[in-house]
Amino acid sequence: MPQKPFVSAQEVAERAGVSRSAVSRTFTPGASVSSETRRRVVEAAEALGYHVNHLARGLMRNESGIVCLIVSEMSTPYRANLIRAMTQQLQNAGKIAMLINTDRSDGSVDLALRQAIRYRADASIILSGMPDRSITQLCLKNGQRLVLINRDDDQQGPLRINLDDAEAAGRVVTAFIRAGCQRLAFANSQAGTPSLMAREHGFVAAAKAMGLPVLVERHGPTNYESGRVLAQRLLTLGERPDAVFCATDLLACGFMDAARHQFRVSIPDQLCVAGFDDIEQASWSSYDLTTFAQPVEMIAREAVAWLVNESGQEPVHHSVRFRPDLVWRSSVRGG
Figure 1: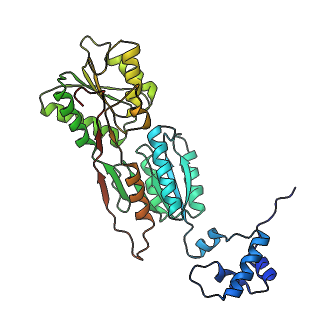
Figure 2: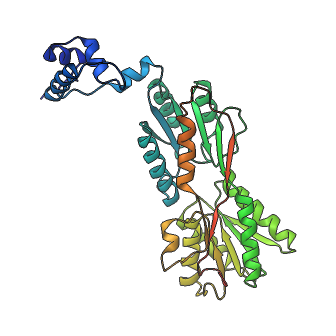
Figure 3: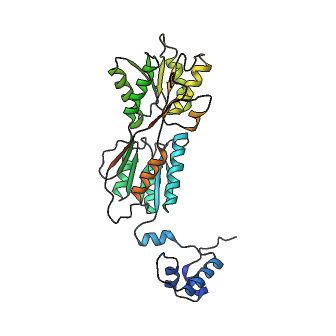
């Protein structure tokens, strides 16, 4: 069957016996329209299945209500949780989220973003440190408002939201030392994002200040399997570490499973392990992982509030830095 075309405001006007402008005023908040005209228009609209074309209305005001979410590694628990929070905040603000997957490194990402810009997307939120900086430049060049999360881009204009990763890493060193650990290691992926590297550098610097060396091992993408490989590398050394800080919880879960099941290492008696993100799996009894909770809801609220600023003035360009909360569980002695 042929697809039914959208019902136009003119069709509603003709059925209700009113002008086209009366239909527009009926569906415009605060506009002046008599109660009788409103009743006739609403009844006609319901009978015809009419819906206001918000895209066309927005374009007349030079805004579409579309916000691009530019995401990598969206299947990971942390990223999925952030997407959930961000889309909910955008929906509450009456915005439409358009998701762009940046896992691929070819020209498809640039093409997808340019397509979104053709749809007059008002803004973009880059949810990770992986996408190339050229994406940031493309968004700004096309007049978009931009929010950068866990990135170190130095352009003027965007709102930058980061965590104090280095300070958190320093707290882990203190926790390990209080647990009696002396041979520290840091397990990281090879993604090299600003947040992951800040945790690594902060951990190494804090340990050095305490007079302790740190073994640093990196492998592959930031996922569970990489955690298993990192455990195999670190736990086959002549002198094993007795404490490991994993850059993310997903790495830590893989690390812990390999440590216990392949090497029969007891956690936390023989090895203390900490992670970062506080994903749901971290609280499962099989891991009970000491970790840092990313303030996902606060990040989403801050980003969307800045984007939908309705003061009539351009939002102040600034950066926000959150301090993650340490969540103590049994993977670190004395926690």
